[in-house]
Length: 176
Image (cartoon, rainbow, N blue to C red; front, top):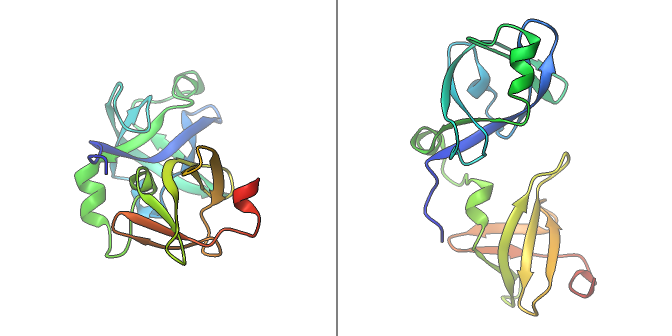
């Protein structure tokens, strides 16, 4: 299994909103309190926080449909806000890890785990987790050399255990 990253993405900046420097942020966490006024986030060009870490205090935040409108300090107009489109809001790994409850896990930590069917048959390994507008998809590198996508939903992903993901893919999935 891979070493933990130094940072964890909690949101991706989609675009500028309005003329006062607000950012439209697609959340990558279920913890809405991560976007609360008074908190601090780091902006990075990568989800892993490997490039250009710049700290910003959150001045204000509000829910807007399935996203957040976030006002960060020092970003005061639309031109400045547009510059950050595509960047990620990240927090230190330790901060995210300390807030993680028992049984919770980070999707990116599934990469490299073995994938088995409910009857114990080894299917392959998780090659990647693809975030979509709906549900995340597990990209599974199959034993036979091909790759398959499997929606990360209870219907198909039965459990996540130490080092292994147990799945129940739909009939015919392996032959696609």
